[in-house]
Length: 156
Length: 265
Ligand code: FES
Ligand code: FES
Image (cartoon, rainbow over the protein chains, first blue to last red):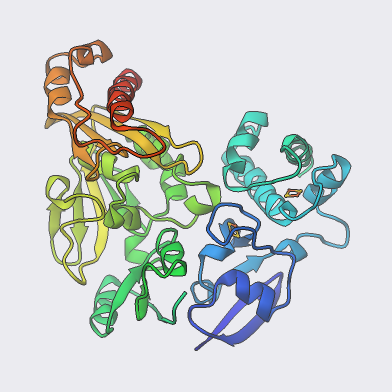
């Protein structure tokens, strides 16, 4: 057991956990932030994507202990009073059906827009589709997810 | 995942000491292979020594003639490195196609090289670029380092600290990804440099990454895709599975090699 402490959505949190605890379990079970989902638990689906020190990572494929001291943002932390432009875009474009993949899609969407902006590259439709490699949706057929990210990319 | 004890290492020496003190410890870098393996209980180390935060292993130096990449540098960092891209863009392109964006933010070059997965991308680059694998104990040439699938020259407790190679005159990687896993069903890295032409193949051989001597000879006298027309790739020793049989993979080796040579220009 170790004490793991990190900043999650701007708040410092600490908990004594088994060393084998995954970051996603720390977030869901210990912090009760259940917006981050587990779809596959085998690193494929991206439902568990959160930002660790500003970068998208699969929280099912990382130990909580390895995130000790990190700054973590989950889906619960992206809205700031109003919905985040990425959340609004998914709403506007019907970018979800069951919604299970959506938290991961939004976290990956924000990450790709931020990265492309920082590198001065254009995030066009083909780039969005390639960037969604690690996020699986079993409902929408992806078209409206791509449209949502495209809209948000113009607004962020 | 079975119980384990987590340690964070502050330096390579600290990691070596922590590993030596563990009953059945293993190194944890990005964990993009190790964590899934532990979840499946295919690995159950008593101790994990996390080397991902070691500063001395997180640097990139791409001042010609040599590129040196710290073992804990992530795939995303290699892909985005303007410094490396200026001298050896092929390695940045290779890194940009490993896994997916979230995996690239965590997975490291040292972890990939140490694991020597038979379908991983980096081993092909290391072998074709005639890289040197530096550890906390010695320097190992890529030709000696990769010893068959999931097997390397690393001793028990030995830690890769960096990887370096001379900037090639020409180099390119062509990969045929498995449409589901995105691992290479065949990936060929071709490099031309001071030591001549080297061609390394990953994903296709049944014992991990290897060099194709016939292609190297053909390209040494004529560095063009056409020069490979006369080379026959045997299906012997090729992987054969539901994704592609040995003959299919043998054909892919040639097709990917030609594409790599064409891309290298
Ligand atoms: S739950 Fe993490 S990738 Fe699917
Ligand atoms: S909306 Fe149902 S999985 Fe994507």
